[in-house]
Length: 114
Image 1 (cartoon, one colour):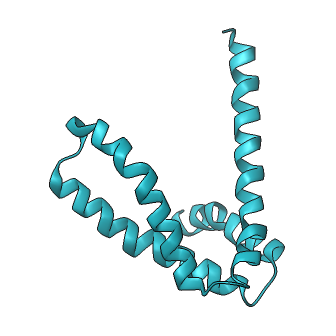
Image 2 (tube, helix red, strand yellow):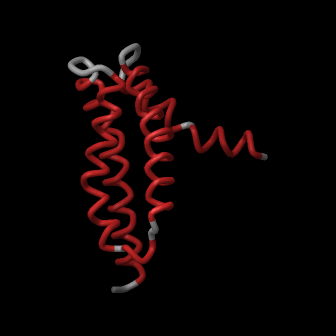
C-alpha cells in the first residue's frame, strides 16, 4: 500500500471513530432516559468484559492472573465510574454540551501539565 493510500485510510478510520464516539453521547442520552446511570455504566463494562475476555484468553502469554485482576479492578473502578459520571451528567444536560466538555480534556490536560 502506498504511503498516501495508507495516510488516507488512517484519516478515514480516525474520522469514523470520531463520528461513532460523538454519536455515543446521543445514544447514551436516550439510554439514560430508560435506565439509571450506574446500571448503564455497569452494563457497558459487563458487555466489554464479555467481548474482550475471550480475546485476552487467546493472548494468554501476555497476561497472567494478577494482570487480569488488576485490569478488572482498574476497569471497574476507573472506566465504570467515568461512565457513571458521564451518564449522570447527561441526565442534566444535552448531548452536544457533554461531548464538547469531554472533548476538551486533552487540551486541558496539556495546559495543566505544562
